[in-house]
Amino acid sequence: MRYLITLLLSTSLFAQANQVFTINPSVYSSGMGNTGMAHGNIQNLYHNPALITLDKDYAELTNVTWLPDLTNDMSYQNIMYTSSKGFGVELFYFNYGSQVEADASGIVLGTFDSSSYRLGVTYGGYFKEWQLGGRFNIYSHDFLDSVDIGNSYGFDLGSYKEWMLGDNYIALALVLKDLGTKNSFIDTELELPTSLGVGFKYTTANGFTAAVDTKLYQEHYSLGFGTEYAYQDLFDIRIGYYTEPEYEVDYFTVGAGVEAKGLGLDIGFLFNPDSFHNKTFMLSLGFEI
Image (cartoon, rainbow, N blue to C red; front, side):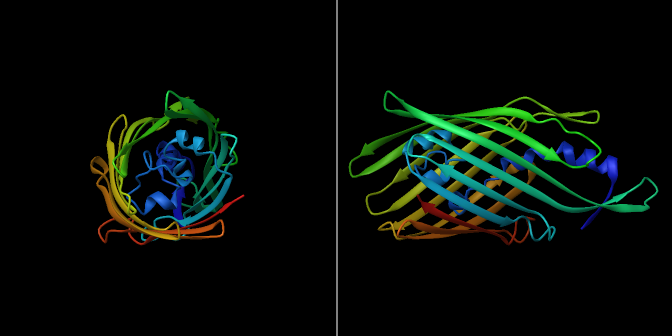
């Protein structure tokens, strides 16, 4: 639990609030250094709406206790549903935890909960062998009952293409994310974290995959590297590395997944003893419908 002076620090919280929408809700790709734009798996739909064209009836539930080395009551959940008809729905909910409300003199007035969510609807198709997709998003924040924060609206656009290279294949992806309107809170306006991303993947015939993603934001960039070994569609193991140099964010990742009879379980773990991302554990359960 953290002590906040109600309006002053709530405004400060809001100033960073849209950054929660850059958190990767895909446990699958979290184990690979948050690489997923060019990795043709429906579990990477967050990274690239063009992957909706994989035409899979699939549902997934994710739960993560976020930054346990920093606090003990932040978490997020993600629900995803995709249809073989080429559309999907995603709901991302971030819980900032319980806050203590105090006045300017430090007298405790009570507690309040704060949260943010994003609701996205995705649709896609093909154009000249390229897989294309678009997603419409609604972004919302709930910090104080007495202050109304208007929703913002945005969209993502993605493209994806694979090429055979002997018995192996490569893939390329281009993605524009979170382009849209602003939120407002008291006298503060906040833009969405718009980014332009490029992803590349190389997969061998014996189940090894290497991937790299980079995203360019207005004031910084991110870079992720990841590898995966998949054994006969039964289980896979993943390792990776992720960094945002301007914000001194960097950590290593590991992950694994098992699948049987249409059910899949994925785990991810972030670690770096010098980072507040250290010891973040991620879990998701997916199933084909």
